[in-house]
Image (cartoon, rainbow, N blue to C red; front, top):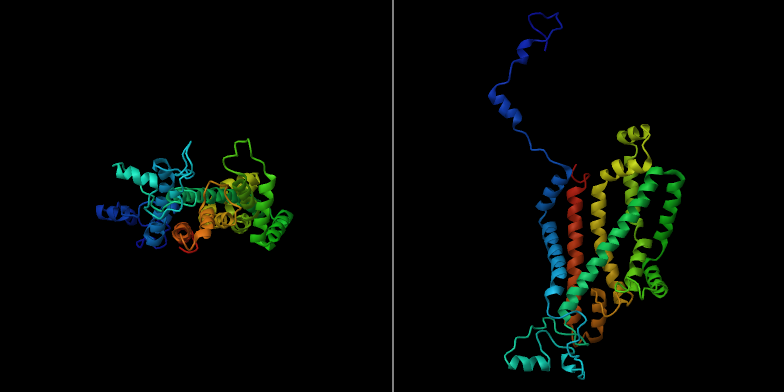
Length: 352
């Protein structure tokens, strides 16, 4: 404000620049604490009770699948009625929940403590509970690693198409359109069958994993990256015209450096959300492939193969189908709800 005593002077009124009082200083320093986009997103996520409960369920199931196989007295491939030098004891086959075989009943009569079969046993006398736990571990591992493969491929191709544009974008998007036009289920089944026959892993370090799981990862890498690539491409197309990108280009920065340092960090929220939603899709795909017999190699279980085996005795032993089905529903539902919570918390358009 100009000096009222000298209206034609351009000098400011010095009274306006007197030192602030203690009350004014306290008012000015009472500000909102500094935060970041990630911290704000986490706070919004924790306020979402459904997403928080879903996250707790996912963590609980994952920890249980990792720890239980090491402390459980039975293994997933142990046939309880089979003993060296003795004929097969069929009394262990198809036990109902909390039932015991003949040998176990004799041990109990003698005062020994036998750990119960919570879900009973299967047709080969194997403890069904630990097979469900181990199958959940396999399904979660396949879903996680398949999502990582999809993330890497989709992130790379989508970034290249979005940043360079022109003919590069045209060629990549036509490939994406071709893959989108293919019937997913039919192509997945055909690729799984062909790759299962072509891949030879006997005598290699991949023998334990099995050819079916490797072929499953290849299927994910070939078919499931297109949605991620399209999403990343759209984000980068909207970001590449920003001032900071043009400034980096004017200084001679390479395209790969601009993508890594400027573009990808600014669409990290979309990447996190898409990856979280991709995991249940991968688990569901693995489950139905295992259900069709194209999943994990026997005797290794997965939730899909357990459900498939349970169909043979569905009327006599319905609990064998119910247990893996409930676990699949619980995992997929929890991951989907958690993914929705991530989207609501970290999508800047929804929080604008």
